[in-house]
Length: 187
Figure 1 (cartoon, rainbow, N blue to C red):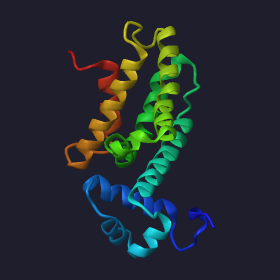
Figure 2 (figure 1 turned 120 degrees about the horizontal axis):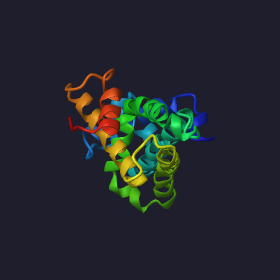
Figure 3 (figure 1 turned 90 degrees about the vertical axis):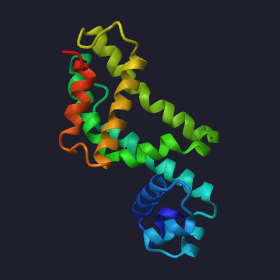
């Protein structure tokens, strides 16, 4: 029986909770995760026999969600539509902050080639949008596409961190990210 087919636990709820626990306290034990999820430690161990198995499951779940979000943003749009496409992507990704933070922070996952390849592949369609926008004259062509994408990712992460500590309203975060990305901070 697969983990997802078990009716006792809805997978995403457990994985979301585990992500939040481990982002808040990277040293949290599996007992801490089980307690936060409202299940027994034995049940958690049946699903994920080791801490590493849980970490890999969390990463796969986060990547599945991010890949779905990227696909839904319409990244295959023409370059002239890049600002709207990037805005949709940013708006959809900011609420996924805990998932992003987990992926960026959990160094033990760097040894998992499948996960590393999936993380690297996430930015490829975004770089393609940027290149099409540069070719259409919508975005600056003198900046490397990787720089634009890395800047966007950093701004999304910064927005989520500020939201987490109560210094930025979630509703204004996408426009803050896009305004900074597209307009910079110079007057």
